[in-house]
Each structure stands twice: as structure tokens, then as C-alpha cells.
Image (cartoon, rainbow, N blue to C red; front, side, top):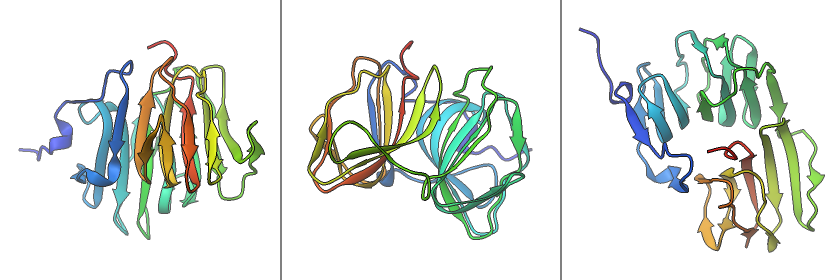
Length: 228
């Protein structure tokens, strides 16, 4: 009889995309995946082992995941260590999009943690994207002390890394919804303080002003919730 992990049972977690959600990922447990040495902190999920999902995934040094296909795409940013697959080695700070129909066999020598989103791309997306966010340029974003680094831009969503200098405030974006992950520093979102590792989701019309008392760097996705 095969071993059945908790992650293989269907899970509904913050699956209603029309509802606001907030998760302190540092306060939730790591859950073993079906592969030894690979664990997950589930942020949002709708399904079983194959699921629409947003997760933190931690690979122990020397671990690997069996080859698999992403029928609805995969998007991730490497938060620590180096993640490797058929396309090469992706160190901390690398942003990757693998379009629907892509496949790979992930592994790591030193260990790594990634923020990954699965099964969340339209069928006609066909671009593979690799961006080194440690070297890619930032551009002014219209407010003093506010900069952005565009990682992906299309008719249906924009993905960025954004920096707010200490004391910077910006108005709410009218953006078709937004999703935010705090990479470092402290973000004030709608007046609520969010530390490193906080994930936020707001549907279209629910976006809130942002500020940072001591400076922060955030990963942001906008526009993808316009039709929910």
C-alpha cells in the first residue's frame, strides 16, 4: 500500500479569491511532501497533491523532487540557497516563470527555500522567464522613496519587486487586485504592520495604501484578481 501524506488529501485553504487573506508564514508548520527532504508551508491551496497553490517549499541539502509537468504553469522566487533543475542553477533572488506544459526535475545541493505558485497561469502563456533580482535595475515608481523592479508584465498581470524607503507612503493601487509577500523589513498595509514572511491578498477594489516605517522590500503581483 502506498504511503499517503497529509498533503495528498484535498485541501481548501484561502481558496476563495474574492476574499481578503493574510498569513504570517513564519508562524505555520512545515508539512512533509511526498518526497524525502522536501517540506511545505501551505499559504493558499485548492486541491490535493495536484492543486492550485501558493506555498513556501524547503529543500534539504542534497534533496530532489521527481520529474513532473506543470499543466497550468509554475512561478517561483528563490528566498534562500540555490534551487536547480534542467534549466540550470538559480541562486537566492532568482525569479522564474515556467509556462503551462513545462516540466522539470528539481534538486538542490546546498538546500533552498522558494515561494512558489502553481496552476495559476492562462493556457496561452508561453514565456519562460528568469530574472536575477539582485542585479536587475530598479526604476522610480512615482513617489519619492518608492522604486520597482518589473519581473513580468502582460495584459493580465504584472509581477514586481518593490522597495519602500523608511517613512515612505503610497496610495492604494487600482490594480485588479494584488498579492504581496514581504521579503524584508516591515510593511504597513492598510495600517496593519506586516513583518518579513507575511503574505497578503486583496481582490480588485480591496487594495489598500502601503507604507513602511523602517523600509521594506516586497514581492508583488497585481491585476490577476480582476475577474474573480
